[in-house]
Image 1: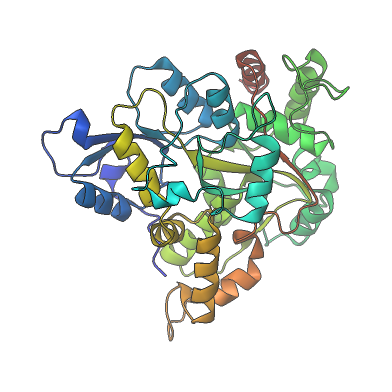
Image 2 (image 1 turned 90 degrees about the vertical axis):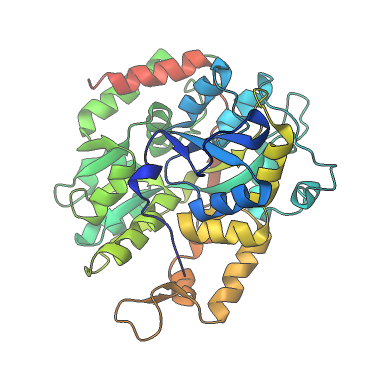
Length: 402
C-alpha cells in the first residue's frame, strides 16, 4: 500500500500552495488551516482539478494555535481541522457554522449521522453536546481519531512490561524501572497536565482534587504537577521529534498520540533496513481524541468548504488519506475497506517477494488498535473545553522548567 509520509520541501513551509494557478479570487480559493504532514497532497491536487480551485494551507502545531488564529479573524479560513475540545470551545463561543447537511450535492454530509465508527459515535454523543445536552455534530466532521499512548523501545526488557502494568504512571516514576530510562514528553501544556492527572488516576479534566471541573486549575494541582515535572526531569520535550527519537534509540519511551506510532513505523520501513525495535501501548486508562473538519464563521467560500469536506469524507478518498497519513480512520466504510484489502492480500508495506515487506493482514493482527484505538482500554476520557485562564495556568506548569 502507498503511504505519503515524506513530503517535499515545498510542502513544509507555513503557507503551502497546492496549485500552479498564478492568480486566484476568493470564489476559487479555499483557505485550509491544518497540522503539518496531515493530508495526502495527491488528494488536494485532485480536489483542485475537479473544482477548478486553489487550496492554500497554513500549518500549525497545536489546537490552541488554531483557536487563536480562528478567533483572531485576521485570515478568512474556509476549513480548519482542530482537536475535539477546541471544536467544542469554538462552537460554544459561536465561531462555527452549520454544514450544508441538507444540500443534496453533498451526499456524505447528508449521511453524517451514520457514517462514523460506533466507538467514536458513542464518544461524540457523550462529550460533544451543548448546554442543553443536545449533540451539535452537524458542525464538525471527524477526520482522524485515536488515543493518547506511549511509544517505547523493545531493546530494554522491562520497559514495555512496566508500562503495560502501570500505564501513564511510568511517565512520572522512574523507580518503576530496573535501569535508567530516557523519557520524552510532548511540549503541549494541556497534554502535560492531563498526563500528570491520568498518571495519578484522576480524570484529566478536573480542576481540583475534589473532582470539580469548573474554573481555573487549582493551585494545589498546579504545584503538584510542577513538582512532578521537576522530579522526573524529562529527557526531551518535543512533538514530531519524539516518535523518531524512540525509533532511533535516543529515547526509551514517550507520551504521544497513537497515530504517531504508525507514522514512525512506516518511516522506519521506508528509510532503513533496521529491525523494528519499538512498539506502542494504549493504557487501560487513557483519553481518546479526534480531529475534525469545521467551517469557521470567517469563511469566504461556504460552498467550496462544504465540497472539500464532502470530498474528504468520500470512502475512497478517506481510505487513500488514511493510508497516506497513518492515523486511525473515522469512517465505518474505511474500516471495511481495510479489512477487505487485508483479506485480498494487500500489503501495508512492500510487496510479495521483497525482503522487507509487511502484509496488511499481519499489520492489522499485530496492531488491532489501528482500526479500533480503544480496543484494550477500559476507562476512556476525552479532553473537555477549558477557559483561557485554565490553559494559561497549564502553560505556567510547562514554563516552570524554563
